[in-house]
Image (tube, rainbow, N blue to C red; front, top):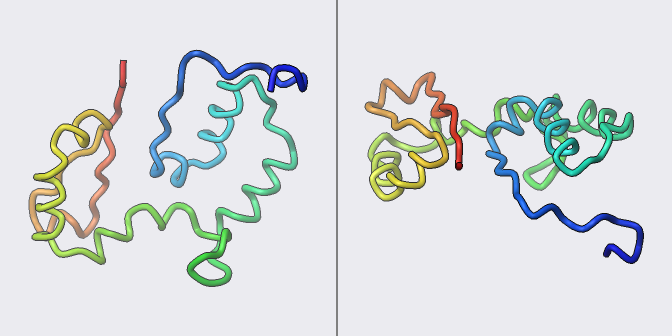
Length: 119
């Protein structure tokens, strides 16, 4: 790719949680583009404006209210199902900055996100 005028990929990587991108698509997209040395082009902003605020179309649509999407599981799964997943993923959840739900009541307004640092 370098022969096409595209710089080589950096030797580091950047971890992005789906929820962070969904909750704050503009800020996270700017961070991703900055990491790769790319500008936050007006076309990117226009795409985010049109694709992250309203649910339009079906299941495979790219038009979504991005803020509601990442936590739908708190309404779709029972606490018992969530507990099985949490118990199976202790290390990953800790590493990626996710907190555990402690009860069915906890799932009603649950936000599992904590800060994380992979270094």
